[in-house]
Length: 186
Image (cartoon, rainbow, N blue to C red; front, top):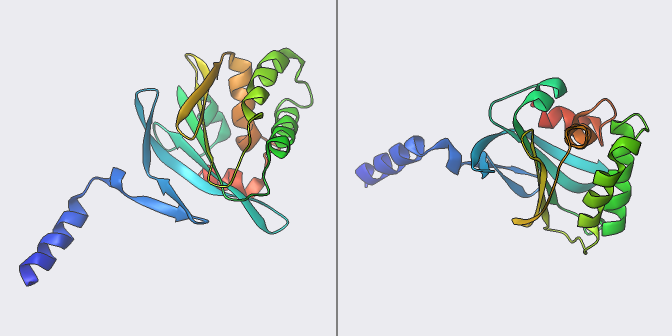
């Protein structure tokens, strides 16, 4: 029995770090993900809340740990994952929040990226329910690819759009300051 316990402990210690996950507001957040054929590591995750209600868990995945918005924007690839934890989030509320996020990210000047914003907003026309997962892969080479529950929805090109999208959560006026800090690992 002692040998079995020792082997179990040794196996647990030797397992790759990729198998581990942490729990944030009841959501298992993976330490690594593979997106666009690239392994990305969890940089940080936190909770978006409003009026003392957790709405979603936001996680940032990058090729390497980064702690500033500028460094994330300069990275060749970054992914933001949103795990919906509240039935209070509807498609309409998500579109309203993202519209506000783009306005804050662009200092109220969305005209140059409005066609991309419109295409992106169409991805949120279907019902959103608790447990849904959105993954937004911001790749300098090809734009932003959006996934809902693991299914690819669309890729929206444009460097200005890619940067504005990342700034919704990581910019000077983020969706929530504490979530930004958590995603940046602070």
